[in-house]
Every structure is written in C-alpha cells, then in structure tokens.
Picture 1: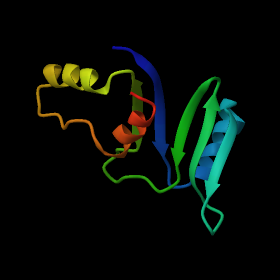
Picture 2: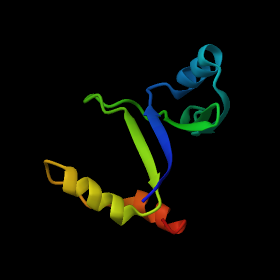
Picture 3: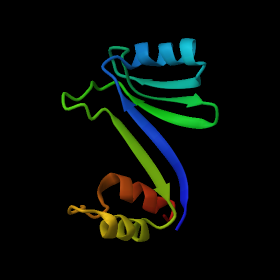
Picture 4: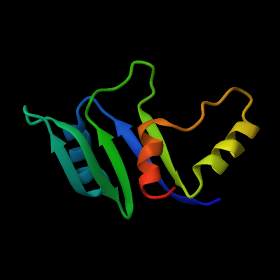
Length: 107
C-alpha cells in the first residue's frame, strides 16, 4: 500500500481574492481559473512549488468544513480496510465520483 500524492482542496467565498493573495503574499504560481458566465472563479488550481492546491469559489460552509485533503493511493480497498480497522466509529466505504475517477487510472 502506497500513498501516491496528497492534494489539498480549499473553499472560499471569493476564490479570486484568495488566489490573488496567495500569489502576491505567499509566492504561489500558475493559477488556472475556471469562471462562470459572470466572470467569477468557481474552480481553480494553484501551485506552491510542485504541490497543486485545488480552490473552490463556491462559498464556505457554516460548519467550518472548508478544506478537504484528497489522498491518492495505489490500492483504495486496502487503505479503506486499514482505516476501518483503526476507526472507533463506523466508516463509510469508498465510492462516489472520487472512487470512479481513481478507478480510471487503475487505482
């Protein structure tokens, strides 16, 4: 079982302001922005060195859950079993769009 990469994904009310700040203050580079019809960024990628960070401009959550850590693994089922065995609560099995996307790459 190997971790292939880790991708942070951050949610902001104003993705453009967040991306501009990351470039200006932190020196992040290569922002690619996907905009809606009004010109507002709804999705973006930006780089901190070699690390890609996903950005959502779809607003923030009131419950404070505004960051996701996406872990790319070589064996989804094996990693799930490892997490399930260590968890002290019920863990939902992998599925949904993330698993289907990973399966496209034979993960």
